[in-house]
Image (cartoon, rainbow, N blue to C red):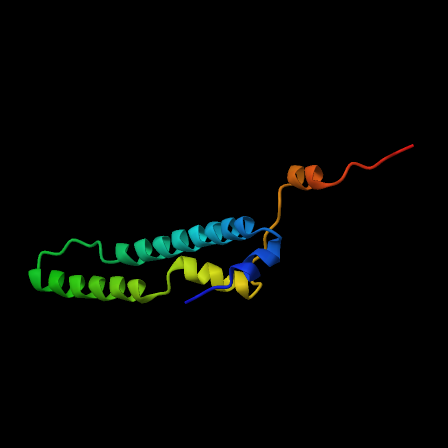
Amino acid sequence: MTRDLVQFGAKTGNLYESVVIMAKRSNQIAQQVKQDLETKLQEFATVTDNPADEIQTNDAQIELSKAYERQPKPTLVAAKEFEDDELVYSYPMDRIDSDEEPSEEA
């Protein structure tokens, strides 16, 4: 999928700031997906004495892992959220203060 880089840069005034925003959101999504997968896989962490149960459990784990692999990549989700104006971002206060023009007082 091709993206319009000018459009990305127009939203923040700087392409690199837009990329950083999307990268941070992508990391958040990836961490959330990883935690969800680990939580679901821990349900299978029981010890069984019956090898047949273990094989059935392994099949369920494989299906769960495949389902997560089929999900869209976090970078694509973050880029789509950014394009659709679904992301909320802000700048640190010291950055905002330093970007302002000094005012002239008489």
